Image 1 (cartoon, one colour):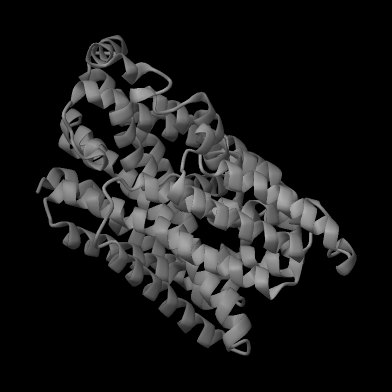
Image 2 (cartoon, rainbow, N blue to C red):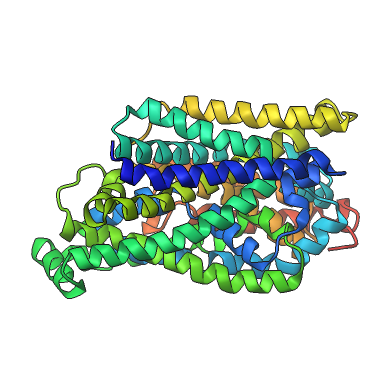
Length: 481
């Protein structure tokens, strides 16, 4: 156990706890518990919005598994990762002001609140809730596994012990602090992620003797490592192009990201967030994945991809600096898992419990229920994480695709197309999720494109056709659309 490495991480965790306890006073004193606990009172400015979007989006996949895949397959994966660069731009530009205005008019606290008010359909609400719970559970498992593996690499502890420690740290500050604690810790974590990425990339380049030397070593080992198509021509032009749907434009359909677009203070903050967020995401995605492939020339022979980034950090940086840099993946994982935890908790409490089970609950009862549900969800994810997959990036991307197949068109068309209705939304969601799961299981690279492509296209066609055929059965869309 290297204490000089662990000390900066321990300080980081203590600060996170402090933010959680400080945020709790807003939760306990707020006149509107639900708005404060699940949206932070809609008070985020530009920097905070950019950081929370970036930190929520940057996850264990970005800092742990992503570099590991790049290590194994080459620069082709770095090219794929860059498709994520405009993610925050797409979300805030397409949803942007209108989404914030409409959700305030509807008094929406969760994404499902918006869908309920827009489509007036219990079927849409229930399918949305089930989709969020199932796919975000899968995504949270990926984050929990990433956090545990990071602690395991640093301390030599058993995986289960590391998993327990990580779970306790996250659950304590999220349960007591709510969305405000999540957003404020995201600001700290996002900053650490950017700084850590730059330090590690510079350290790996120096350790490898410069970029020219690293590239030369990679070509000598296998020229396909520097090919845009990856080792074994793994990434065809069609696959690379379609990957943009999954981690670029499709990000609009991720509930944990979309909800950020309803929580900022004003349009000035949104415009600042677009600029800051795009620069931050570009730095992280390009830098960390480049670290992965460059690291192959510096430290060859690493068998488990998820251990590439921790191993490189420990080998190319002084111990104390390594501890600071390793706070970056810890920050990425914690910030993502806390956002997912809040999303699942708000879905269960606000969208299911308060609407269908006990709608007349007092504020005090809602508080207790929210705390309990958040804790129980976290414990269930820990249990599901006890038997981890080898490379967690695929689990995370599977969850991304499932959520996008369900939500992207009900959100976008519901916001901008007055003829969009509950029949079209329901048909699109069902076609999207069923087709996505079927393709993923039986033919993941059909026609050489990513498995999200056909569900997204078919979901759009289904939505438009069914909405047009049933438009006469529905009253006009809400006046704010």
